[in-house]
Length: 83
Image (cartoon, rainbow, N blue to C red; front, side, top):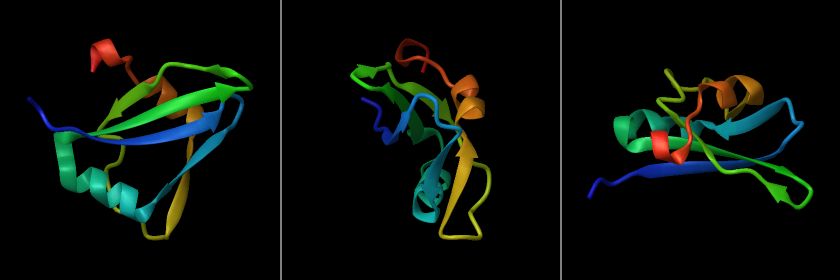
C-alpha cells in the first residue's frame, strides 16, 4: 500500500485560525505527496469528519510557529473519499 504521513489539527468550529510549528511544515515539505494535513472541527460534542489538504505549505517557516486561516484551509480541503 501507500504510506501516508498525516498531521491532524483539531480546532473549535468557530475559530479563525489554527497553529502549525516549523517542524510540522518541514515534515510536510520533506514528505511531498505522502503528506496530508487533516483538520477536524469540534463544537461541543459534535465532531465533524476530517478535511484533508494536500500540499498545505509551500515554504519553510521563518519562526517557531505560525497561524493560518482555518476557513481558507477548510475551503481547500477534500473529504476522505476524494483524497
